[in-house]
Length: 327
Image 1: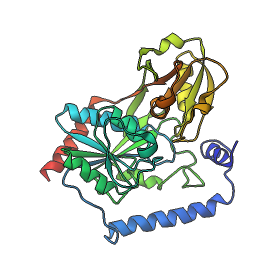
Image 2: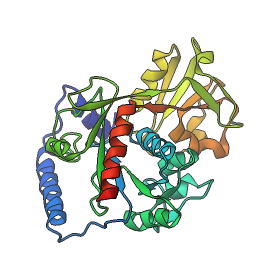
Image 3: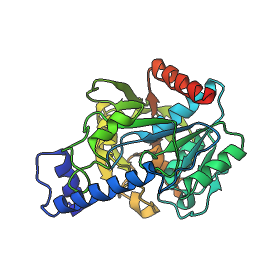
Image 4: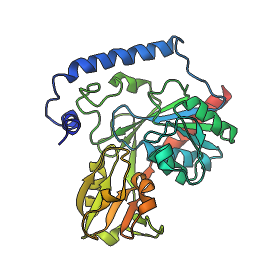
């Protein structure tokens, strides 16, 4: 186990984090507080767009289910008459300048999560300068911008903040990076508009969410069949996401025998990474599948999931957006 894995295990377990993480966490706290203060006082400027901005993010490092929530929010707004678009930094990609994604973007250039979101049919723009990327969406006709993983990106002013929480791991030891998993202090939760809890224990005021998926899709030809067809079989499970164990556990809960293959988040796959010396089925997340289609084999499958949220959440979100429009 690497040092990073040991530290992350200590964040969410009973072990101790290394002593040297405490002074670094103190430094992180100071820099984070100074940065926020500079934005609040106007020394650093937040760009205000002419359309509402909805931020989807989290308080902890690692995966909580932000991307499925982003897709669900975009789809719900589209059904209600809005023209949403998603802006992303494009983490893991090489692209620096703002870009409006086409129908078949290259994950090596723009990142895996933007490609996954674009595949859902939502307009997506990427760029390290998120305000500039968001303006590309507005020029393309979008009337709502959704910022994926943008809770700590204060250069883009926002009208609604959604924080996604891992309901199983919650906030670990409650300490700031690198002594704990927190990107910002717990007090930040009091400022967001909605807290979405992905599985596990739902806290007071949290919106409950479940990730559901009962099918698999062949990477080679997009053939779809029930995940239940693999019940009782041994499969290789591949995940290069923030919390791979969640994916592995979900497969086991549906009766599959899982051989785990975790990779670092946003890992750039090559064909050899998935050569396990046999022809057993290889199941992976949709986020990983977008990077593996170019060299896919017949026994590789992605496992799509959808964020299931109560209708009352979307009603409240729309009501908030209407108030922004009137303002």
